[in-house]
Amino acid sequence: MERTFDSSAAGSASYAALLLRLALGIMFLAHGLTKLFIFTPVGTAGFFASVGFPGFLAYPVIAFEVIGGAMLVFGVFARWVAAIAVVQLLVASSVHWANGWAFAAPNGGGWEYPVFLAVAAAALALLGDGVYAIKPSTSRH
Image 1 (cartoon, rainbow, N blue to C red):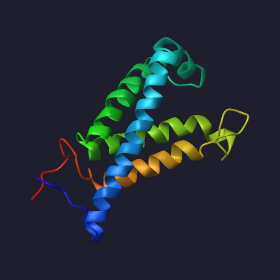
Image 2 (cartoon, rainbow, N blue to C red; image 1 turned 90 degrees about the horizontal axis):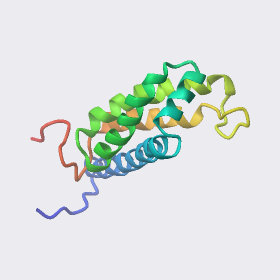
Image 3 (cartoon, rainbow, N blue to C red; image 1 turned 135 degrees about the vertical axis):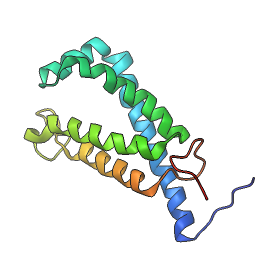
Image 4 (cartoon, one colour; image 1 turned 60 degrees about the vertical axis):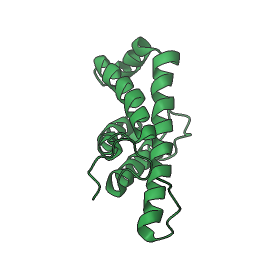
């Protein structure tokens, strides 16, 4: 089936959801793979413990970021992955609350970047999977 660009509001929203889904998915993959291969799971667990989270939470976070990121990119239950991502991102932003707004702050980064990503994930959860989703979150009628 050939897809043509639909300039209606609904069609445009579906393409917007695709772009948002890809951007969030790539961001999660990049962060998850950095935790996995650069910081290592043990190093990430140590960081989590240093900021007050149980160190063992590093392992499901890494798994979510890598697997969830791939699910977003490919459009596999993307709406549900995005909804879970909102929670993960808001919890992650709590590390930065005391540092203020600017993520580039010299004291460890502010909270605007993870909160922005949480809002973007919430928007994707509300918009839906977008076009070219392999396994949409809801049935299409």
